[in-house]
Length: 115
Image (cartoon, rainbow, N blue to C red; front, side):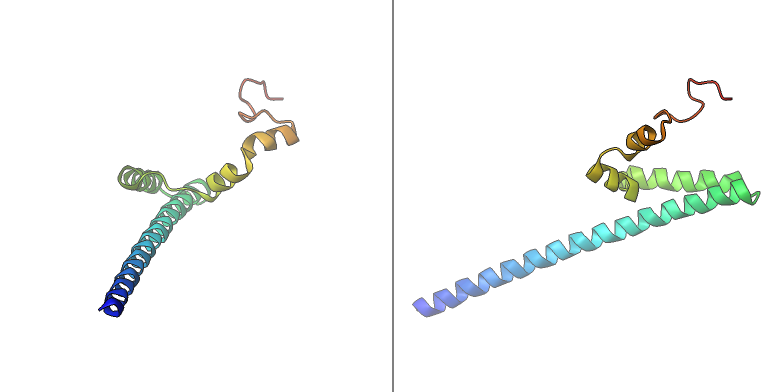
């Protein structure tokens, strides 16, 4: 019976590893789907802002897109944008851009008179 016990134990370990792999796969799939949904919401907002600013589109589309982002954020937390992830990896890009261009970090016109 010693051999059968070893086989049973090995099969139980294999099943446990397979279940762990499935669990990790589902988590990764959920993460990818959430990122796609966040990206689509941001794309919709960008399209609405562009249409409103450049094509005389309705502002209501912008407010709708913002509300959808707010709803998503309430339900899932804020999605991470490409800019946020690159800033987290390489430091704050905004402050380094301001230093390299000589522009104030808070943007032109903030606390300065425009010429």
